[in-house]
Each structure stands twice: as C-alpha cells, then as structure tokens.
Image 1: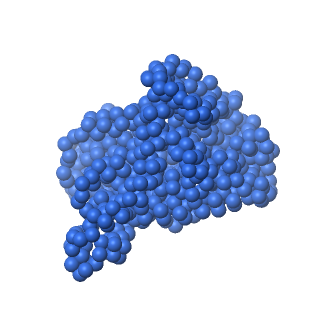
Image 2: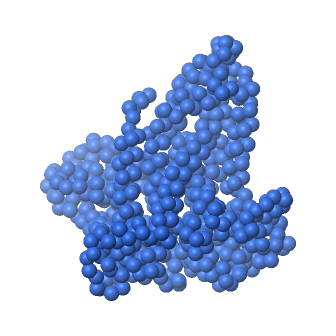
Image 3: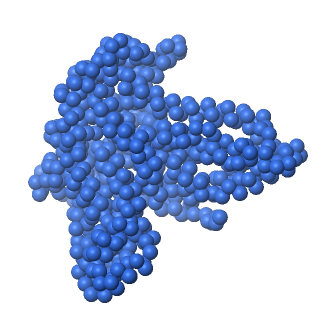
Length: 299
Length: 307
C-alpha cells in the first residue's frame, strides 16, 4: 500500500528540520478525498431536510410531478391544514401536558433514588442499583402487553396519568444509573460539614447535594426531554384515542391518513412544524444537547 | 448524626422503587410467565403449554424467521458501518487536518460539520420516517432519489426503494446509520480529545502517515469507547421498530423483506391477539440482548492503556 511507505529516508528528514513539514502527495489526495466525503455527508443531512421544507410549500401536483423544483408560489394553506385539519397544535399541547409531569417526576424520583444509592450504605443497596441499571438492557417489547394489562386493571389505560407514570418508570433506569455515578463523584467533605452543622438528611439533599449535582442533572434532563419527546412505542400501545395522541404519534397518524386523503403538502407542513421547536432548541443549546445525549452513550 | 438514616432511605426509595417494580419489573416477569401459556390476551382463559410457543417460533416462516434474519443483518451491519463512518469522521475533524505549523488539529469547518452531522439525532423517528419515506418514494410520487436518478438519466426502482424486496432492508439500515453517525462522531471526538497531542507529534516526527496515525495511535487508545458504542448500537439494532412501522409497506413488507423482531412482537400482541406467542419472541429478544452484552464485555476486555 502506497500509504504505508512514509518511512522513507526523505520523509524522515523533513520533520527533523522542525515540526513544519511539507504535504506529501499521499496527504493531498487524502485531503481532497476526505473533505469531499465530509461535505457529501453534510449534504446528505442538509438536503433531505431542506427539501422537505420546500415540499411543504408545494401543491400536491408539484410534489409528485416536480420533486426537484421550487414551488411556484408558497402554499401556506398546507400549514393551515396541518394545524387545523391535522391537529398538530393539539398534539403539541398534549405532549407538553404529559412532559411537564413526566420530566419533573423522572428527575425528582431519579435523583432521590440515585442519591440514596450513591451515598448511603444499607442492605440491598447493590441489589436495587443493579435492578435499575439492568433495566437499560431490557427490550421494551417484552413488557408491552403485560404493561397494557396492568394499566387497564387500574383504569389508567388511555389516560395521561398512566402515560406519565410509564414514562417515569421507563426513564428511571438510565437516570438512576447516570446520577448515581454523578453523586458518587461529589466530595464527601461538604456533606459531612453540613451534617455536623445540624442539617437533616432532607435539607442536606435539597439544599446542598442537588445544587452541587447541577451539571449532571442538566445533562440527564436534556437526555430525558429528547427521549420522551420522541417516544413513540409506548403511546402507540397505551394511548389508543387519536385525539389524545402525542406529537410523534400524531404525525404517524397524519402520515397514515395522508395515504388515502392524498394531501402530502399538509403532512410535510406538519412534519416541519414538529421539527421547528427541536431545530431552534438545537441551534441554541447544541453544546449542551450534544453533551447530554453522548452522556447516554457513555455507560 | 446517624439518627433517622433508615426512615430517610426508605422515604427516598419507596416511590421510585415501587413505581419501577410495578410498571417495569413485574410486567417483564409476567411476560416470561405468559410465554409458557396459550393465552390469547383477550379472555382470562389460558393453560400452561410448556415450551410449545418457543418451538413454534422457529416454524413460523412467514413472520418470525424473516424477522430473525433481518434483525440479525441489522445487528451486524448497523454497528460496523456506523462505527466505521463515525470514527473516520471524528478522526478527520479532530486530527486529520494537521500540518499547520505542525500543530495537530481537525480539518477546517469541523465545528460546522459536527453541528450538521449530529442534527438527525435530535429528530424523532416519526419525523425521520416521514422524511425518508418521501426521499425513497417512487418517481411518480415525487421521490428525491428516484427523481434525481431520473434527472441524470439513470435507471431507478420503478416502485421506489421501499417497495422493492431487495432494497427495502438496506434502505432502512441506511436511515438508521444516517441518524446515528452524528452521535458517535461527537462521542468519539470527545474520547479523541483526551488523547495527548504529544503522542501524535511523536508519531509525525517518526514519519507516520495519516493511516498509521489512525491505526497505530488513535484506534488502540479508543478501544473502550468503540466497545461501548458497539453495545449501544447492538441494543438499538435489536429494538428497531419505529422506522419499519413508519416507512415500509405493510409495516414489514414487501413480502416480509423488512420484518424485524420488535415489529413482529407488536403484530402478534396487538394485531393478531396472540399474546403468548408474542411474549415467547420477546423472551428470545431479551436473551439475545443479555448474551450480547455479556459477550461483548468479555471479548472486548483488553488491557487498559494508561496515558
């Protein structure tokens, strides 16, 4: 391989003159290739997204007949139709209603459990910890039907209360796992000082430990917000009334209906509307979001 | 100072553990039990039939066997391609540029690329499904790829990519890779940032090219991250469902060419009313995930390189 031969005497001499070294032909070819490849991938992300935005302003005929062209005149009616006929606005409100409770519940319960598991010695600590952590690997599919029956038995099926509780329960494994590791890294000195000063266990948690754990709490909150906002499988099974659909489920319903109503413009408009808040949040908080989500990959 | 420790522990654990046990642990345990019965799910009548469901799983060549095959393919292809691409991109963006006064840095515009590549990760699978279904659509429905091929005068699949038995699975995997690469790019980037620059500089002084730098320095030091990514992507591969549900004809078609295990469990449980059978397949999936995690942790264990 040509690229395996830089151990030639010539190549050895160049850097000896200093860290400055001239680009080898191999390097230049690689440079062009890899730049081209990076831009190709960037285009593969940008083009479909921009294209769907353009398509959302087209008529049904333009979408089918002229996929690569621009809309003759922007059809804002698609957006009106997505909002009124497609109920995108309602789905937004439904999702927010669920998430206000599910996110605060997840964070509160997750932080409480993680804190105790990280900082207190007691019998069964390890067992509970591995019980939570093991849940990260369970395929949700296995539990779907028993879960459905469980909620049905207590009349929580097709209710937001039920969905909120399920979201919290299924977000706990990773939240507890991540926050336990985080609470373990916090210095013990501060906690001991607070206890000596007469703070109770509860005050210690809410007034000392939680504020200290803020970076970890923010990362995992972002992780959970994105995860629960995008959740599809659980609402699909647990919320059967189309009027109660959350955003991703509502979009899927819109896509299914579009099949026979034949209004792709409205579907794309709905998709763009659903993408917009995420896009704006991503532009503003991209660093935090990237950190929060890659925390998900660091297990 | 120690007083009230146990009441405190109990008060903090009762709710989370109770909720978790009620909605996660117990349903999982029940699924194991259901898998040994002939329960349809609608009535309360059922008998224990031993392992019959498990035996029948492997006779179902309409749904289960194609699903096992397809999920198996995804399980191999998704991690390999995603990790390969994201390692390559991460290397280019962080180290590949170099040569500016001998300082090691990424190619120009790396911040921009990271932001763009990562974006699909924040989109919901429902949105991604709608987006790519249209990208893959047949020419007379305004598909982007078919339309592009047509404009260049090249042949394209007549009914689009998703209605073609040979292309549908590849198309779905393509979307999975598309959405995952950005996350692992950022993940590997932060791991690469932790590698001391001197190691690269020493490599350059010794005349290492970019290939050697990557394979002799970067990759060995990133081994743990690669392993983590592998486990994570494998679990994603086993749980593929939403894209198949959103994009493919008949939610697994055509002709079962894109059936996946998750989708088949969902079909048996909620469309065909065969709870017990669905649960048996779920149990198989559970053990697949468990085996995978154990094996990759064991096999991937190498001596940790301290730096």
